[in-house]
Amino acid sequence: VSVTPDKSEVYINVNISEGERFTVNEVKLTGDLKVPEAELRRLILLRPGQTFSRALVTTSNELISKRLGNEGYTFANVNGVPSLTPNADNTVDVTFYVDAGTRVYVRRINFFGNTKTRDEVLRREMRQMEGAWASGQLIENSKVRLERLGFFKGVTVETPRVPGEDDQVDVNYSVEEQPSGSIGASVGYQQGTGFVFGANLSQTNFLGTGNRVSIAANRSDIRDSVSFSFLDPYYTIDGVSRGFSLFFQQTDISEDDVISNWASDRLGGNVTFGYPTSDISRLSFGIGFEDVTVYASQRSPIQVWELVKYDLYDANINNKYTQSDKFLNFPLTGSWSISTLNRGVFATRGSSHTLSLQVTSPGSDLEYFKTSFQSQKYFPLSQSWTLRLRSELGYLDGYGDDDKPPFYEHYYSGGFGSIRGYEDRSLGPREIQSAYDFGDPRAIGGNLLVEGSAEFIFPMPFVADNRSFRTMFFVDAGNVFDTHRKDEYGLELSEMRMSAGIALSWITGIGPLSFSLSKAFNDQPGDDVQAFQFSLGQPF
Image 1 (tube, rainbow, N blue to C red):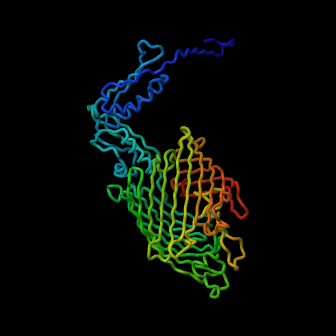
Image 2: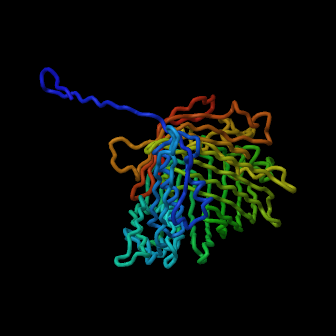
Image 3: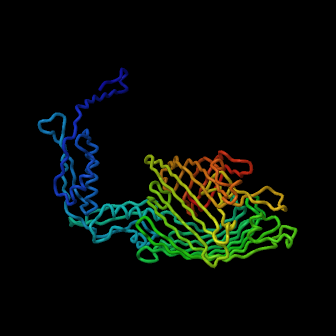
């Protein structure tokens, strides 16, 4: 230690002598193991011939303790001790002393902080049972399942000893609830659809029961709709889910400058059942009905004319929808999903994948199938930075007597949840215009969807609690194609659209609120770009 000449500061020099390196000669395991020795040896990271590392000894202690904890030995004590090898220079023997202790059982499982969510909703997610021995793995799996519900900002767990008992613990889960839905009425302007008037109730935790309920009525410049859906994730005690939905929608796109000119009335509903195949995967099956009436005019594109078998000689010369056709379909649906995400909302690690198929059943007026695959994976880069990769593929086609699928089932691309920086549903194939349409060709979607994105998630500056906020830099890429018009709109990498920017999402009391500011990289003539976009009710 020395003092500066003006005596205002002090220099502190630390001299370090690393000494000699030691090599591991032998690794021993002794004590009350309770678990086959071969299993515990696989958890020891030190090997004979390696350079001795205190960090590897500490990590090995933790891994062995965790393994014993999974068998109910919650308070096991493991200590790796090095000792000099006799008659050898710079070598050590490492002995791991294991004291498993008494097997511990769970007396009670308690929940704290769930003021809105019923105890039974949390208790049915438990994989650790009361009266069984305490398993560290099952206790942690139960915690992760609570986080995946999406009802809570955070979940913590403690396992205190029962006073006066050496072989019993309580498992205490503490949760902090967050908004799990939205309710309200709205009057405003929404990008892509114009003026919107609506009322909605959307709850993923309806009245604290864990059931999902959504009721909505919306009116905009191009679309009027009402819908109702209900899902009970625990229709049976074994976790079989049951859901159903009903909807009615009237669409008139004659005033839209982006999407093709046509109109439709759609009435439908479905019933679905989901079956858990493991703690992280499930299969779902459903059946539905859909009554669709499609209206066409002289200005409608050829794709609409083909579907309704438009008779030009029986048409009105103005832009009124004078001809229509009605289709009654019975779609069958199936899906397989697997998720290891650590949270239901704003995940930071894990992955999820969903493969789905919809096909119209025999007796339907139209024969087509639609399949899609959605995938996302989170890679923690540090304690606060995360990389998210997302991809989506979709394919639609006809079968049997219908060589083409109906145009109203087409995929669209652009906007939130798709390719940000481009107007909603504006990318991809253009309509084949009739001789009576003198405007620019508009988007009509396609039967092949390819999309992907990379997002670098980081903490929101100047905000202490980031659990309700998500900020990110992103790069989006993708488009929609038409395999029935390969010469014009077939799959080409050069036709993939790209954008990059920054985005923010915020869980509010009325639902998720999202904004993005982006730049389209390779927009082409005819593309509709939007640097600033927003969405209410759609988290990303």
